[in-house]
Image (cartoon, rainbow, N blue to C red):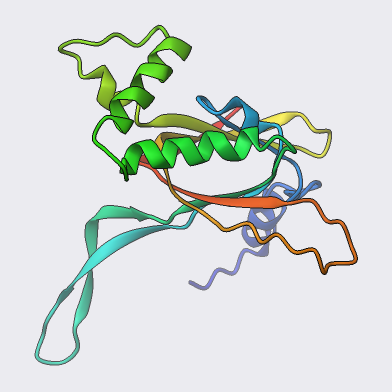
Length: 194
């Protein structure tokens, strides 16, 4: 669009807000509601990709993409330092084992029973609380340049799907600390500006 009035163009340029501070990749906190030991040792977490599906409408000339109606969320992954007593690793391990019950069908009910003791606000009965205990909520808090929380990423109904291997090696000359990597699936995530 052509305009002869230059002041309209310069006014629109000068009205854009200036950005003084940028998002830092190392300013975050992560908490899984039902895994307190993992939260304090988290070293990295990713904000997962989100994609909108689409359909293709065929035409005689080119196929035209059409807006879809379902979102696809990528897996959520964290890296965390493993405690010497492996308490944070064991929390994730027990959650995975209970969900997969590899030895017998009682592994999941006993896991649910231990979580009911730990979180007594869940009630058993017709509201299907035992199913809700398989999931947890998690929060990734983004901090500003002064380490003040500015944004929460709220993950709903999160559950683990993988826990990567730990490679013990006596030939290493360094003594690095073990870092665990866990991946999660979830129903959805929401962005909450604080």
